[in-house]
Image (cartoon, each protein chain N blue to C red):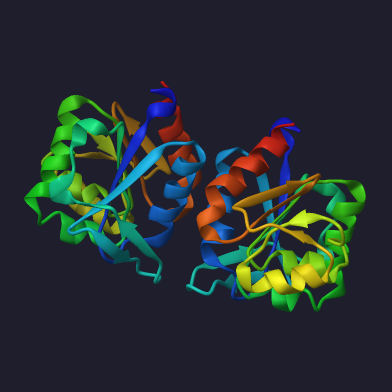
Length: 171
Length: 171
């Protein structure tokens, strides 16, 4: 996809700050455009107090404009999984075979969207039980790549997580 | 320097969390080894509550082992500039011509070490007056590269800051 990659970050209040910000800065370093979508346009605040501006509401998102869906963790995914529009965005990325990256609690959105049955993935340790119930082949590894899906467990996995994401986007 | 780059981060209590963590993760993604040195070995806590482990005390640092000195901001530089051992580390990087990158309040250490007179640099806006007094050709730009020295203003500059650091390390 080269230099035309556009990344969609979907998050909400109480995101895990470094899981959103470090990848955001990394994508921007690479020259990628990044949109941040949330329940409504405007400021969202991380668990550690960092504020970021969601420049789109979930309703405004057009998934076909993006090359990657990125789902940070924290408490945001627990609220997002209750919203049909968030689930629908994830389903459209999966349907088109485009890369989806989720870390920590991020995969909860994919579980509720019914997208992980039979897939190999990882997540934050407290999410592992529900992941297994959802039919996931769960692995306790820094990063798991299964087709278009890239998952990691926690902030300390960010280096390998981003490494795999960059590899997939350069394809 | 290829894949043998070793990075030294010098920081202390009340560092600016993303200015230490995002670059730390970025260096690790690239396969660089990273040491974090502080007043003493052990945990240091950022302004936003993130904890990182300083695996070296400043006294233990051997500057000749590293390919880059990285100075994050926050309140850490204000305490580090009072320590001769911190100033001495910076002076040895400059004497050897090795890359030094400082963001936000990070350049305060270099000012006190007497290293910036006549150099082009930037910093957090509240640090600009003392930078000018120290004889710096101050620029209000996202990043300023002057020889071995790379400086930026604030967290939102991290993408271009890291881009320039990576370019210099790949030389």
